[in-house]
Image (tube, rainbow, N blue to C red; front, side, top):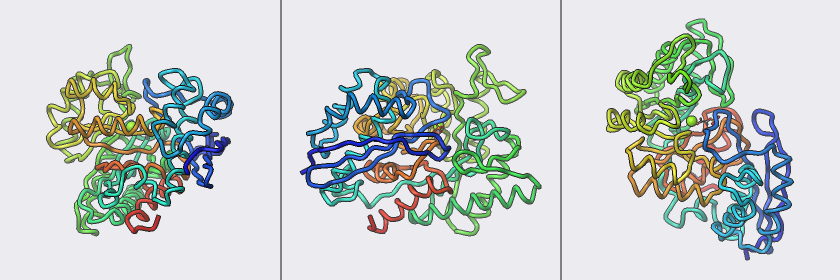
Length: 400
Ligand SMILES: C=C(OP(=O)(O)O)C(=O)O
Ligand SMILES: [Mg+2]
């Protein structure tokens, strides 16, 4: 039986060294699940609210845990409904989306444990497990994830021609290593940003050259197609007072930004562009999608924040053609699934994503397989990133 008998919550470290929420869910037949909340740095204005971990835990213990005890962990909608009812707000600002998502994920894992099924199968059904997402690997970055580095937040390797998820994962690691070689040859020192990507003190224009060179080298080596993409995280560059995107000393109007990104898509044959425009500008997103959406993915992260209401608005005006799914942006797995389903019904690609602050939790690897997502964005190197990548390799190897 998957009836919940206990939920415990604790503060644990995330990859930035900040406190985050970890939840354990126990069931009456001894099922056990553990989930930990990730945390963003370039958070969208419309995301569910992350409270300080201690505050979130105290509120969840008082309001959510009593409602959860006695529910079936396998009834994910009931669990997530109880979390919403306990919170009573639209944005989880009472108990915190961090406790909510940790509990939601832990309940799913406890149910899978009782069933003796891998998490992706519990979440996605018996016919999942044959298709794997293409991993988007952050190899160079800056923005809110590293100081004195690129303005564009992430340059992402996209091994679109990889014959297996394992070869894709290793290809991204090889691109990460090749970037280090290219930077070294150019005499550029580079530390790493929050997600383990290189964070060199170079211009965005130079970063395009470096990543293109690294991708070409690895592509020659592995013999399958590797492209690359971006997370511009443009909401962080947009200055609403000036009505312009600020790149250090340089600014771009919205029209210039659309022109700039469309030019980059063609010049570098970009496979993927996330948040190329401000999170409030559906119109400019629609214009860019109209121009280049036939040859690249225009993905909404801060734009949609995994929220079906915001996604519906985007679908209505043709803003983007894909959505980033971050369960902690919305607070529960049920809400994340609803966003995936709405996207799929409308021909939008889904990209399941980590956050810049992460833990060893591997739920998103299972979520990507369970939802048949085309892509997963979960870094390239570093233990909290490889936890997800290695879990994908295990799922493909039937070893979970
Ligand atoms: C992963 C991202 O960063 P953060 O978690 O800081 O929002 C992102 O913007 O896609
Ligand atoms: Mg993003």
